Image (tube, rainbow over all chains, first blue to last red; front, side, top):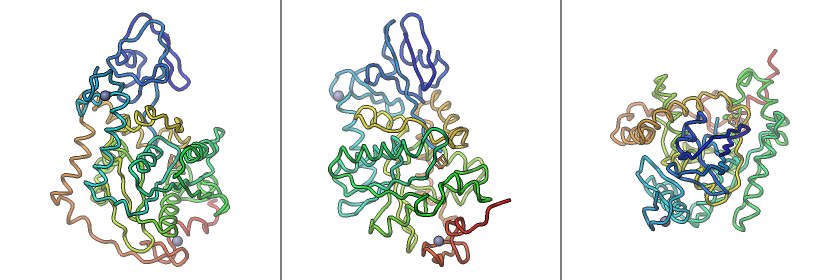
Length: 62
Length: 309
Ligand code: SF4
Ligand SMILES: [Zn+2]
Ligand SMILES: [Zn+2]
């Protein structure tokens, strides 16, 4: 599956749960939301081999 | 995961509340929670005119959206700081606010253009002055505070609402506790009363929401906001503190919430009563806003300061 976050991109093999995939690419699950086809996914969602997931940062500010 | 209300697939889960909700019930819950916070802290009533400080980010646009849905008389205030930095940050965030308002019949707003009114953008003023050299955020805070107070007063608004969420508040509290800034800690509250002529009553209706909750609300309801941070926020202390708090939250859900709500409880129990002493304030000779500085306020001084060598 393909995972994108800001200008970064990763490919993961096999099936992953959202939470584990986020950790695998080195991010804190608390700090991003996972979106597939414009829809928000809960952390326990089991992703498909061919899914394209966009991670959206929740932190803003200054 | 299933929605607790209807059993359909959930789209969002809040570990600290042990609550998962669907596409329909999450926005409903979010709006109802905002209404509860407004009442709980006596922020304002339907008769009040509310000015919402909007930046183009998720929190402030979500706040404006929810207040309009709840039927409050809420207008927007956008402060154009003229931040470009090669990415056109101010122009892009201003466009988000304009789009948001254009899509809603009852969303009216004021723009304060700093360059047009004072002759310099924020980055220019920061570069010129000792206060801002290398730390534009210090000047930015000053400019935004002044503009918010001014428009609240001149526009006849009863209250100024900002989109600060629990993560923002917890990060500020964390920084203040690290340095034991007891005066600041004593004043950190969901409602700051108007402190006399020219200083608006300020409220934070989202102060009990986690940052991911306001982001989820914006995503689910299709509010188009600016994802990128201000270029000057990169490496900001508050963002570092948010990261540390999120690490703790990851291991123990609810940590951020307990940290911040504990402050509110401690205040209610009177822990900070002795610290909340009044500072002497008098009106600025130029703009009339109350200030503790003699003569001109810090904002008016900023525009008169000669370029730093
Ligand atoms: S990061 Fe600093 S300069 Fe940018 S908007 Fe926030 S306070 Fe202003
Ligand atoms: Zn539901
Ligand atoms: Zn002044």
